[in-house]
View (spheres, rainbow, N blue to C red):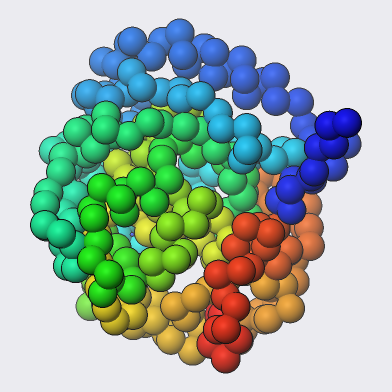
Length: 318
Ligand code: MTE
């Protein structure tokens, strides 16, 4: 007898909203995928009209990563962003239009067989794109559920061929004060840097997103390439990556550089461990007036809790 085992991140069917609206939208988008020259600028933000890989979207959904909870409508998630390079408000969409996403080169260096650079479109074409529905829980206690398109980070790690001495993956955002007014501020330790252990980077859930809502990432989401690690607070999911370095030492992250006591390296979601200035017990669901209980590892414990065995003395939840 076939028994479907409900994964930790899934929610009961009765809480699901019909996806028909979303699916119709995907079908529609699929139909116009060839119209790559169409430029959309509105509440959804700008996405590169000249994106040579836009025909690859929408990608087939990987049903192992669906969730039976409502997706956040794009009109909410696309106009409520954290992207400090373009300002500290949530309305960074207009400023993020200045982000130039082509040409875009990703540099791979550090402890690898041979450092190299690869253009974003070559990289995207090398990978098999898939869609995954993921939760996203910001450290500020709001959350959303979105359909990312991209590929597992482990595939990029495999492409890089790290040496055995590589213990961490350091990821860096672009640095260009002329494009990003936020980077002119001396209050922040630019560029934005994040890091994962190699075990975390190779976990199935660690995902590189190049698209969202069935099309290439709009600028404010961190175009053209960002991380999505849904069991960690959102600040770990670094946007607009230009460099991946395989290193032996734990990298110092942007937020640690700013306030290590409040934003640590691990930053795993845990409702029982408060932020020094607010509770993490529940979260406001973007686009609704609901607050729902926060789940340990944001509901993904089954997939990731094992990564932290033997690390109990670390500040795993800050
Ligand atoms: N990456 C960069 N480069 N700059 C940022 O300011 N903000 C982080 C993360 N990645 C940030 C970033 C935070 S705090 C969150 S919650 C998420 O991006 C927000 O992602 P979203 O705007 O796509 O919802």
